[in-house]
Length: 163
Ligand SMILES: Nc1ccn([C@@H]2O[C@H](COP(=O)(O)O)[C@@H](O)[C@H]2O)c(=O)n1
Ligand SMILES: C[C@@]1(CO)OP(=O)(O)OP(=O)(O)OC[C@H]1O
Figure 1 (tube, protein in one colour):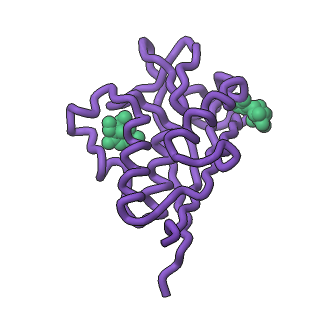
Figure 2 (cartoon, rainbow, N blue to C red; figure 1 turned 120 degrees about the horizontal axis):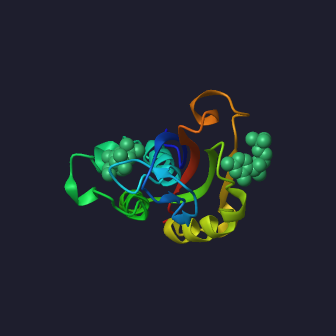
């Protein structure tokens, strides 16, 4: 039997680095440090790409956009989300809803959630109500609690396009 809805999960972590912008969910967040990565290190978008690719059975972000490819050096990770949505669409899938948790001791994410949702809904071609973004600290425990980096989890539901 072929299911017409699928669910996927994604997880990503990037370490803090001096001299980098902090880009989360496509939003440039004022902060004394950014995240290190081959691309712009948007950990939220990377976790989400993995959730979408996972739901469609298409592997992961590193498979589709390898960090050995210089075209992705310092890339705006919005292009990974847009390309992932296109790859799903070519296979008859549309995004149902997504839920993302950013795990960061700092900075505060909540003031930026509205802008992130608006931007992400546009990339996913869904209503903003289908995009949930939230954040938690780890109460100072572990690598996130020591402010060594930021992690993100994402889940995505996709469904077969009617017709
Ligand atoms: N980086 C973060 C972490 C948390 N928040 C918001 O604060 C609330 C409380 O977080 P706890 O980890 O202390 O439970 C959380 O629900 C978020 O609304 C944030 O904005 N940014
Ligand atoms: C996005 C890619 C490609 O630029 O590199 P990074 O920015 O390092 O991010 P990561 O989460 O390791 O995902 C896979 C990569 O191939």
